[in-house]
Length: 221
Image 1 (cartoon, rainbow, N blue to C red):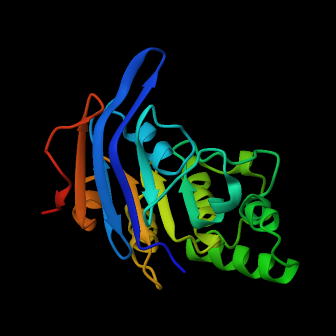
Image 2: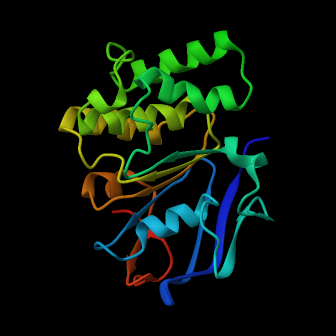
């Protein structure tokens, strides 16, 4: 069964003796998208990593359909598709290999891995560069490989950190459409200061110094 709700309650996180997140509460449901915006250093990336179960919360908790996420528990990892701001690609692997690796780790058969990898790269417009090493790709191309890798696994929840930052207008529109147009419906949380992204999302959460400064997530205008 697909996830129907991602919820954070009273979320706080301390790093190096400093609070980088304080009292963040949010809810995103299947078919909904939430944009997280705020100046550099406001806690956007830390919030996304905490929502994805990659950083442990110091206070509060994150829940999927009422069940708390346990950091380090890899059994639910395939439910998430995570797009890192730094892409997180293995430079010595090709674009195809970077997309295929998480699918292989899930134990999918070779034919299904190949089909999903090909489809994901084609969707982001990179079907012709699949055999090139990640280190040989431009920043924008690597960013699109990261998006392809996240979506190839058909995740229930997509967590994307600045997924359009280095893209030209055409590819920005392509990636945004892929992230937000999904069937079956999924939960999408995107960190971005791009007004186009915020306007395309159903809700917006604005952070300042690790705190929501607009109150609860509100409809984007």
